[in-house]
Image (cartoon, rainbow, N blue to C red; front, side, top):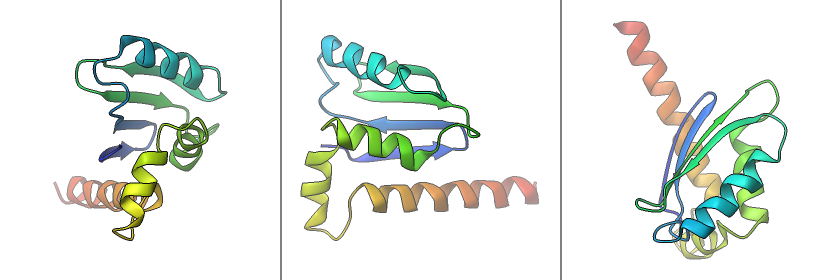
Length: 110
């Protein structure tokens, strides 16, 4: 299940429970994501389950990365679980976009 997404332009942190406690899964996700154009760095932490993804915004996007993870089966449980709550990775992305916009507004005020 995926229950956390934090995103800024060029940077995403997503919790993927399949990574937690599994260095092998962390390595697989890292290699998988790094095989795509525009993804510059991936750090999958098998202790926390967090996956940090740094990407080139001119070559990739949050939507593309979430779709890649979904297509590989890493987000399907989150979508199925969250669908009953009217949410899913689309809802997570919407929250991340709103969070980014709010952070930008706060920084503009400072």
